Length: 414
Ligand code: NAD
Image 1 (cartoon, rainbow, N blue to C red):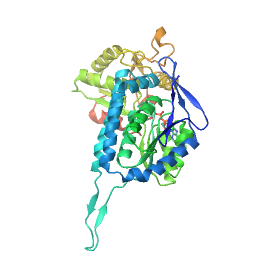
Image 2: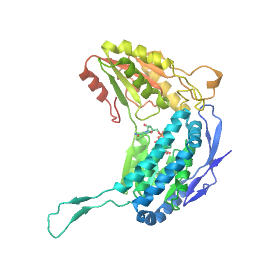
Image 3: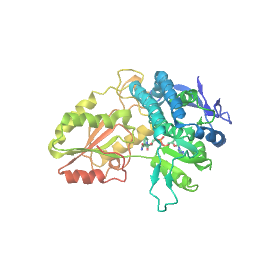
Image 4: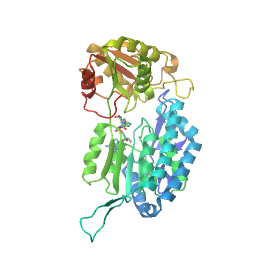
């Protein structure tokens, strides 16, 4: 079985402990590959390598850094099919969506290759004739980038590309549960001509590798996407060193369908955003509020479209939806559906695993439409991260806005 390594100081590296983890396909639980599984010591070595590489990289002109990032983008595009297949096998999403994710990651490299040249400063009017005040951007140092499993390549790319373009060096830690495609992406980026130590990659748990990247004083910036609870912990730890911090956390996005909506278009948009990536998107449609006057028509349309979605292993070119990422995600979805049904919701379609031998070993779940929801139900308040479209009706736009805003999250709205 292929072994995916880490990247420290320009060298593909095994973990110091020799530990490896096996990554399995969520569609059938077959092993896909092994990955070297690092710990705190590996993370500290990677941070030191990034610290050593920083002065040299920071000195290079943004134009030259941009050239390397454009070359990296070309290499990622050349390898897009290979990287996308790995992504489908480790994460579950259908191949065409995996391809889009990899191409979007290549775009991040191109985008920041250009943005690096426009890292302008400011001239601030001075209070004294004898002084001039300039605000200038300078590379900060080592950036730690930590990403989740739902878009493991894309979310890593949109963090490391700006850091590299700005002249920072990077230690990247993808999710330990979906690290393979991200590794291929990082290796291709390194191959484009980055000096050793500028981009490092460490695999391992959040508890060990993630904590080291946040707590070690070498990292001057932490960019994290993941669970809100993890983000809070990282914020608290990073504050002890007054580190720069970017957090992208959970969401619970409402969609409002007004009385004058074009029903077919609205239903299609809600279906797409509720079920893409099996609902495992931070900006998924999590709650649909529909005006009373069109609620029945909208529900019929949404159910009709949902029933046409094809489910299966992501490498099959005909499928629309793959498996969920893990049994834990599937169980959480089932628990929230059970809670909603207990409190008076009704199922219009889905609500269970699909039947058939081909689904037996994977974490498949039918896309589910629920009606008669209300805010006492967990699904209307907590992130589901599953393929569910829960509907609740309203009678005035003011009521719809009040319901949409009745949430402690604020990430997206439709
Ligand atoms: P997670 O928080 O469990 O893990 C995310 C990353 O953090 C992983 O690499 C993990 O190993 C690491 N980590 C875990 N504990 C850590 C710690 N104590 N210190 C440092 N690093 C640690 O999240 P997940 O389950 O991988 O991803 C799903 C979550 O991500 C969902 O809540 C979703 O809403 C969120 N998400 C948000 C966005 C956004 O843009 N807002 C995008 C995608 C996903």
